[in-house]
Amino acid sequence: MKKFSGIASYRDPIHGFIHADPLEQALIDSRPVQRLRWIRQLAFAYLVFPGAEHSRFSHALGAMELAGKAYDALATRSDGLLDPGPRSMDRRRLRIAALVHDIGHAPFSHSAEGLFAGGIDHEEMTRRLFVREEIARLFETYGDGLEPGSITMLLSGPGDDSSDADSLLCKVISGELDVDKMDYLLRDSLYCGVRYGTYDLDRMLETILPLHDPATGRWGMGIDEGGVHALEALVMARYYMFTQVYFNLTGKALELHFSEWLREAGRRWPDDPDSFLLHDDVSALTEMRASTSRHARAVVERDYFPMAYETDEHLSSDEKREFEALLPRVLEEFGSDRLLVSNSAKDPHRLGQSRVLVRRTGGELTPMEEVSQFIRHLSRIDRYRIYTAPELRGEVAARVRELRH
Image 1 (cartoon, rainbow, N blue to C red):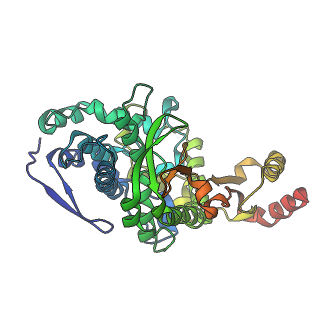
Image 2: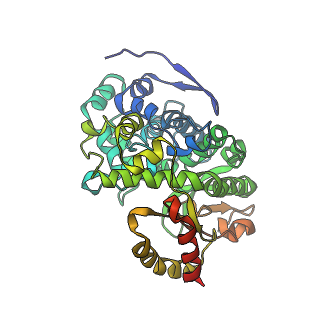
Image 3: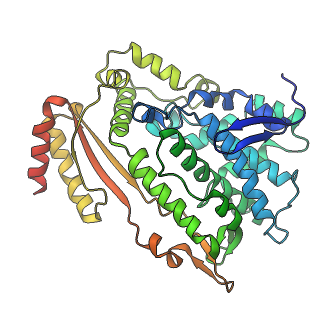
């Protein structure tokens, strides 16, 4: 085992120097975290945006750094709920949870999220990887009183018996204003060469604060009224990154081909952590390059099905039902093996399952949607696209238009 002592520095294009203590260094050097170097943050987006070669490894470091900054901001405004000390146990737990929050991602990240054996998801795989013996040994050597179980609790989310502090920390990892969103928007925007994902991070950190939601009885991250415009900018950044990058026309086609190749081959990502560690983007691409499958060649040679038809970006519930009703007929007429269908759906202005509260100047708490007229009027992204074998493109497009009208 490598020996770590002192503080290490990592240079990051988003946050500058990121400093890691011995336990963080050891975890960064562990197999589950190092594997993230071989998992691209944005799956096949690099085949659309040439700069999007960044990995989940750099995002993990960025999330860890932001977790420390968010903790410091919250602790100073928590009236004793959180210990503001730079080496407080809760601060250390939070940074480590942010560092490892993505270690369970399968090759090409969300592209084949639903193809784990045993019906698990990447979040469950993250928890399984974190309880391996390798991780336990690192905590024994460098933990200085910190236990792995206190980290997995933050990764699992708050339970009925969670303390107020733990409920708040869980929201920093996965919540309405979590450090995952705060980092990936800036990072993805930079590497894709677009400006959609930028927002005022400094102002966000200056105005976030712990708030007790009287509707749920739990503590979470809220924002002072002075930070509302910074929050609006984050929501707008998220909205445009989904419409312009994450739901990109070509990127979705490549994801569909990848998923079809996996299903065609009867592939599932192992639910055993040790076996899972052997799979990454490189291993998947190696298999695809050796495959004669039409879907594998579509990715490797960038010879994907062209789009034959797409709906509006914001389908109403009635329009969605009507379009879904005609899909089986189209698939039957033209053959499901020659058509790929994507549904890109997201509520980017709804940042999580709970509401975001704004503390008004007078002290009252108001849901974000009531304070921000801009956010209140954003609507759900819900768009279907049909991709086809090239020779069917015109025919399929004409038939769908006919059925819709």
